[in-house]
Length: 199
Image (cartoon, rainbow, N blue to C red):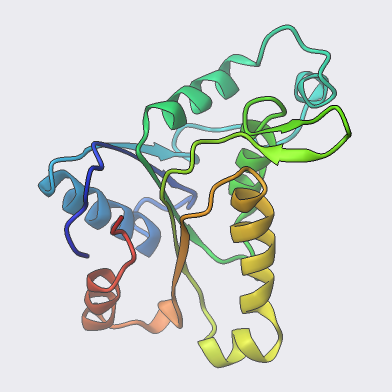
């Protein structure tokens, strides 16, 4: 990890149920690095905070433009994002995508008229500030397996373009630690050194 430029506030969102997991270790290392560079870092541990990922009736009212106010937990998450100059997501790959908890966070937090908006002609445009987004994932398989079955492209399409690109964010980088279950401390250290956490 190299030095950051003009990043003062970072939000790290992590989604792993085990506090001693590699995802939490990476989160802690990234947070420490960013703090050493002078950034303020807030960590949103979705499991520890018991974030509710399921779309409920109030969420659908927001989606359809019928709600007068956002649910309190969603407003809190959006305020966290509004404070950030950079977003970092740390997560394990489950079934070739993000965990359900993080997918639910996308579903509920990235709301109509905040993350994206509809034009009068029916077109949709991204509405979020184009701040850097860094996706840091751990995977049990290797790169060859991902590429062989098209999973590398699937994550690019679903998450990089389908979530963040849809919301107007262009500076999105994905780093995957492959074969994470058997990674040595040296391999993890090298992965951290080469992370695209740099603006």
